[in-house]
Length: 113
Image (cartoon, rainbow, N blue to C red; front, side, top):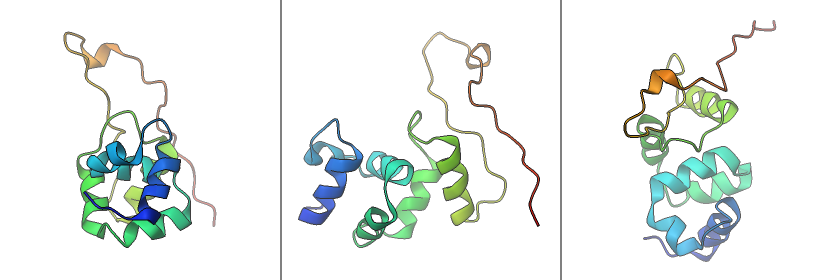
């Protein structure tokens, strides 16, 4: 685990409901919260400790329920991942995922020129 006062400060603000040690123990989860709720300044701090490959790995295997549509689209565009895949969904044992309504359907918007 990375032990840096500035990164701990970011972790405490971005994942406010748990302590920094717990947050930084799960880097992919921390990065997902950071990519969703972090400020640009906090992203810059985190990039001093996490390479781009870890940010990309977070997008390739994201924890469900953290990214919002706007952040998901933004970071997929930043890393030029082509078509933006659907947001990750939580899996509930014994429940058919197709039976759960999509409360945040993707919206197609025309480009402004």
